[in-house]
Every structure is written in structure tokens, then in C-alpha cells.
Length: 325
Image (tube, rainbow, N blue to C red; front, side, top):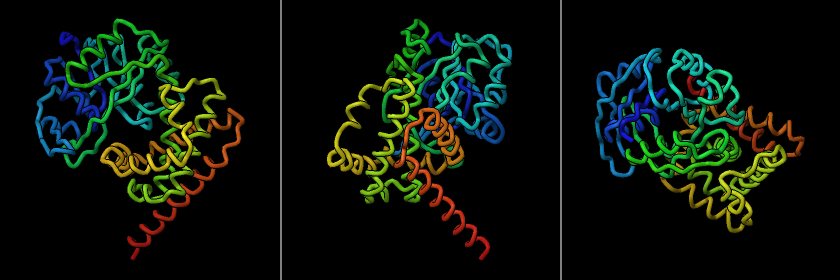
């Protein structure tokens, strides 16, 4: 599997992490970075620090400042925020030699923009299994679950298995999804109500954990969001979500409150929400287009959105007042 050539587009937390892991496993990997991040990586290499242990490592990965136009790679892992997707697709199009692009970005719109830019046969989708943040040039990270990968048609193709094998050799566990488009949409259906509830509580996971009313409201908003996707014909993916959110609130709410107090909630959820407000706003807009399309009434989801916006505006007003003072 180590004979694969891998290009990683996006040198944030996830792109840097996977580039280092693949390189350390002996994979031929190239990382595309831009601007100041390119300068940081050229000078320092990929510097990783584990949240739980503080263990730090430095890996010298090949870094390029722009999309290679004439080089062949077996696969390109695309690790950018949804707000960056349009400009990313313009950059990716310059290389006609790459047969597979795995898009890891959040989306409630599906893969059509990627297909239009690159062709359906070249597009795959997935979801990362890590979270974290950059502090200066150092990537603080935590790996918490399996990476999800899938072909658009649900096949367990030869290239899918080979890509997964290469990642597994680098220590990245992989699960396959038979309907990765639905998987990504249900992730957004989770993220939008949760993000709203978090912003209502200053994007603090511990504060939300102590507010049972907002936790229950978040869970009901998620159920309404799932109903929207089912109405539009998207099967629940992964299937375990069916029974998790079928649990009554007197069971699920305390479990959710407990999860909110863990490092996973802090590192994989709260920090991302604080650092990616623009992306969350875009995902919210995308999902509410689906709500409108479904014709369903979503009173709790609507209320979460309203209260979240009010909380954000109030915080911004307070911050502006402090600066003026």
C-alpha cells in the first residue's frame, strides 16, 4: 500500500496531521499549503502535539505552495472548510492527472459542485476522525474515532480499499459508508442544532452541559433535522443514529450532558465552533434550504437558530463596546 502517491490539499489541523502520519508510515505524500502556513511548514516542518499527553513530534513533509498541475498522484485528500470549497475547486481543476479526490469538508448540499468541477468518476467523500486547533505553528490534536470514506455510488471499490489500507498503515482507522452523501448530510443535521445550542452558551461545552433545558432543546432540534432529511429521501447514515435519537430525553439528555464535559467535546466540538463561525453560518444556511424544501414545520430548530443569532449579536455588541471603551 505504501506505493501510493498522496496529495493533501489544505494544511490546517487535519491536513497537517494526516500528512505527517502518512509520511511517517513511509507513504509518498505532498502537502499543499498557502501563504504564511507555507512559510511556517517550510521553516519548522509539521509540528504535532497530542492534547492528552503533550507529546510533540516534528515531521519534514514535502510542502508545495500551489496545486501541482502536471504531477500524478493516486489520490488527493481535500481538507478545507466549506467556505473555501469554491476557490479550492478552481485550484484542483488544473491537474487532470489525479483519478480520485476525497472531499472531507462538511456539506448539506451534496457533491454536485465537486462533480461539476472534476467529473463524477473522480469524486469521493469522507469525514475526518480527528479535531484540534493550531497555536502558532504547532498543531494540537486528538484522534477520537474512525475516518469515514465512501464512493458516491456506495461501492466498495478497489481504489476505496487501497486508500483505506494506506491510511490504516499510517494508524488511521477507516470505516466505509454505503451512502456517504447521506452520512455527510446527517452530520450537518447534528452540527447545526448543536452549534446553535453551543453559541447560546458562549460556545462553551461545559456551560451547555449544565443547562439541561438547552440540551433538551438541542436534542429535539436534531430530531426535527433528521425528519427533514428523511422527508427528502435520505436514509439515516450511519444507521446507529436511528436508535440513539429514539431514546427518551430522560435517558439521552444526561448522556449528552456527560459527553459535553469530555475532552472530545472540548477539542473536537467547542474549539471548532469557536474557530469556524463562518463555516457554521454557511452550513446553517444550507440546511435551512433543505428545511424549506421539505415543507416540514421545525419549531424547535427555528427557535434554536433565532436564539443563537441573538446570543452571537449580543456578544459581538459587548465586545465592540469594550473596544470602544
